[in-house]
Image (cartoon, rainbow, N blue to C red; front, side, top):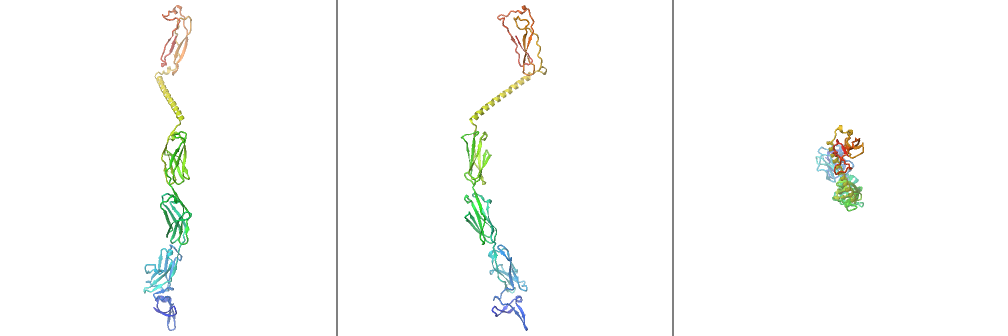
Length: 467
C-alpha cells in the first residue's frame, strides 16, 4: 500500500506500507468528500526496515542476569493484528545474528550467559513479502557475582607430607561468577607461587616432590573483578622419615655380670620428631620411650642370668618404622656366686647319692625281711622258761650258786632282738664227783667259756652264751 506520509521535516513523502502495519499505525480520518489515512512520520529512510516502536518489542527474562544464569529473549508483537504465520524472526547482538538464520520462533534461549555477553540486543521480523520490521535496541548487562568464602585445602589432608611426596594445594570459593583469578602464596610475607585464571570455583597448585625446607604456612586468593578475597593460613609440615637407629649397650664393666645395670641407648641420626623408640630382647618387647624433640633415648635393665641374648631397638615417627641391628649380650655370674653355686651343686650331688644309697638299703632290707618273715602266730611270743641246766663252772666250792644264763629272744615283729638273763639253782654234787683232773697243759684256775654263734637273720633261733 502506497501512502503519502509526512517526513521528518514536514515534507510529504510517498511510502510503501504493509497493510497490517498501516492499519495498526495509521489513523483514518473522514472528510466530507473523502477519507484520509494519517500515518506517523518515518524514523528511518529505509523503506525495507521499519521502526518497530509500536510494532515489535524485545523482552529478556529474567530481568536480573548474573554470570551463569540462563537468558530468554522474546520478540513481542505489539501490533493490533497478528503477524502472518509465515513471519520469521531474527535476534541480533551488536548487529551480529545470535542464531544461524531466520526462524519461525519468536523466542531465543541461551543456557548460560556471562558478563562478556553484555551488549545491545534487538530482534527483527520478516514477512512473506520480504518486508522487515525491527524492534528497539535494548541494552542487556550481565552482572558478575563476587567471590566469597575462599579457603585452602591440602592433600594429604592435615598438611602432613613426607619428603619426596606430592603436595597439592586446592583453592576453593564458596560462590562467584565469571573468570576467577586464583593466586597461591607462601609465608607471612606472601611470596607468590602460582597464578591461574579459569572459570570455575576451584583451582589446584601442586609441588611434585616436597623437601624439608617446604615446611611453612600457605594461603590463596581469588578475584573476579570485585577485589581479591583471601583464605586463611594453612600450615604444611614436611616429615623426614626416621633413619635406621643404632643400639648401644653400656655396662659398668667389659663383662656384664648378674646384678649389674645395663643402659640400652637407641638413637636415629635423622628423622622428624617426635620419635617413638621400642626395645626388644629376642623379639620380645622390653619397653618403649618417646623423644618429643628428637635425638635418642635410654632404657635401663637390671641383669639376671636370663637376660643373655640378642637385643635390638626400633624408631618410628609415623612415616615408617626402622629396626636397628642385633646386639648380643652375655651375662656372667660373679666369682663368689660361681663358688657358692659350685658348693651348692656338690652338696646337692652328695645328698642325691646318699638318698640313692638309702633307697637301695631300704629295698635290700625289705627283700630280706620278705623272705624270712615269721608267721603271724609266731610274731609275738612269750619268752620260754629255760630248762634247768647243769652249771658249766668247774672247780668251784661255792654250793648252790645261781648262775646266769643268757638267751636272745625275738619277741616281736621287726629287727629288734632282746637278751634275757635267767638265774638257775644248781644242785650240790659230791666233792669226789665234782673233782676232775684238768687236761694236760691247762691251768686249773682258768675258766673257759664257750660261745654259740647263730645267724642274726633267723628270727626264730635263740642266742645263748654259756660259761
